[in-house]
Length: 415
Image: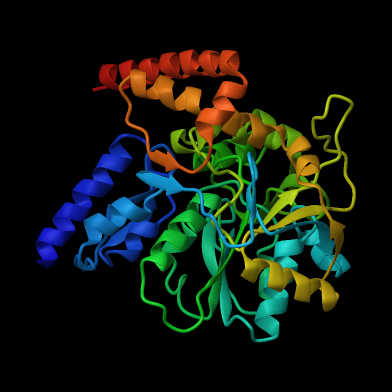
């Protein structure tokens, strides 16, 4: 049965990858030790058959169909949660920041996730967390790491706008641990955990608002454009943090430091290189987590975020009773400082997340009409949101239809 299960899983994985619906989360590698994640020619993380012999779990293909974000995603309904139309289920909401000034400075916004990870590992509540940081040997790359202390949490602070598959890391979902991951990673992890026997302490899932995963090529090109050639070694590279919102910064081995603003790095370079699956994501807000963090931006007169440097501030959403309890204790212990947050105020400073979900049905319909399969999404209220602005939904559907048609024609012409 092992070979048959592996072949069935390979076919299921190939269908998702070949239709560009793979998010690169790495959850499929949890179903077969013979699968591994690697960068493809376009610079995105994709599952491949590795050197290890196939070792699928029984019924791997059926489990894959249930947990893969390229197949389906369901909006959860935790007990005690209010469901906001664009922010998802929320037990409690907070404007917050790390009380430790060093952690607050190093973090992408208020350093809240870094503070929680440092606190929970050092007080022994969680044995470790799986997170991500720059690769030591090649800081242009992003790798999964195991965090067991404040120092390791600090080393992993700040966003990484590049492919990484933390669910694929060894021990990422072991009892007594935690995971800090993109919404698609956390969605897949939650689905895996919901379908598994309860053993010990279920991993604590932390996430963040996500606008998509850019190609690795975008990071390489930006470093090159800033004046550091591909063959030059780097000592460090960070995308944000060390100030808020922080600068994209690369430190070359020869002592040079190059940088550019967050607005420039994301808005003109990285954000344009996000993969297709991210463009049709129903959940950029981490609905399946226990706790989700987001930037709580200052805004201009039109309501759009401004990126002047300042002290970072996070929005924290407790998605589950467990997440709420962790945050309550973190505030009481002085790990976090903050106050209650109005959800509509958060939605008001996250226009990308709101507009993306509100027009997503149009994007899905346009892609489907152009012949591209799309994942199944349930519980997100996409039809209701689309009807709220049917003209914009229709415009989005038309644009999506045209883009998919052009992409399909290009793929045919390249054969």
